[in-house]
Length: 76
Image (cartoon, rainbow, N blue to C red; front, top):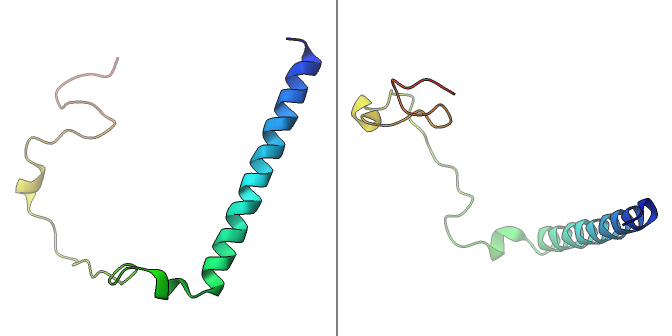
């Protein structure tokens, strides 16, 4: 492919992305105008109380640190 073909493909994809974002923005605006709370299932969006007490340490037994690998091993 030539540089011009690549640029044309990028422009086409960018235009498609812009159209998709505009469509999503319209859908969100329409949902907000129609009263999104009425269209939500019961309980969705309700506030959830999270206690300040520490979690039980037994919850973390045999758990790996996500993204850090297994305990006792070194990163490559």
